[in-house]
Length: 486
Image (cartoon, rainbow, N blue to C red; front, side):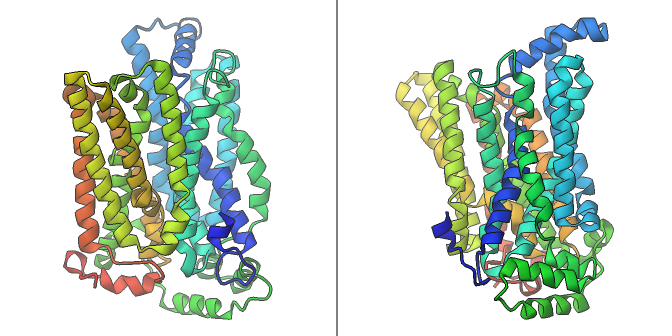
């Protein structure tokens, strides 16, 4: 990665401090977000059994199988509800406490959640388990909003895409880590499952101390706190002692003079010039979830079992798919440095749509013909989908708001995008099992339609943002649906 990123000490691109900040904040904040998504899959039956054991003794309740399934659905989905709630306050927190400050608050919340996870079994408390999931969702929403903003505001414009992709890499890595840690041979067994749930806390704790020493966003210090001195110090640290940061400070001063007052939610929603960029941010974040990627990871074991693999083989294949997902996400910094956003997004949506269609039909004909060869074709389409997702939908959706919108409306837009992302995730978790029951192998067809709609929206309305400041992109979108991107 170092060779790809061309780390140097001249302050024109990657510097060692910027690289360390990207790595530490990713491991300490976004990896736990992905960890929360995947950690309950493997030990699900063990935790359900624990719930069934404590309900009669601690809550004077005898539950049926359906009631236990409903309780488990609540335990899983309350994390997503927490994400939806957290998204509503993320903009205020990032403006009030800063980008780094919001990440620190989120890290402390994650540590508290880890303590609840560790002790919930000893305390025989469902409340501790569900509170930890809910607070973890709020903290994750803060992280998904603040992390890409923080990194993009630290980095020079020339490498904005390369730093923006770290959010996606962290979440992808967290999902794979959770799959490994929650295996029965590791911590996902009857004796150690609370430690499997709280394992991410070690990463948060290790990375919290370095995070405290990192500089705050120079843009936030200058434009929100009006502290030019601290902003200059932060820029000098980031670019290197030999770098001249006066031009960047002049640009910040010019931005401050032209700064609009569209910072509240109501003001952003009423501003017609912000309608199209806000729509793009929300549509990309929603499509990222509704594309079916989380359905594949939530229900990959059942999909692989349906494709004819044994439970043990499906478990290892699921792990391999997670590893492939992480490896393809590592291509992000190189791709986003070399290629424009528009073609990456268009190709990403198109490849995802084709892969979902291919996977649906291959599963359908495999169930009809009982052909073993088609099961491998289904896996091939899953891998193709993941590759397409990591080309654009995965990384770009997280940071496109920071490239489309100027500083004043940016936190609101990013938090609204996060709200649409968490809502889409919640809808997939609730609706996909029903679609599987009704449509079987064609349950992914609505996801394919969403990808096609996003492709059309991207082709028609997304201006190229690579190497451009938001102020240069704004005139291309100020007329809403009548805008012309060229």
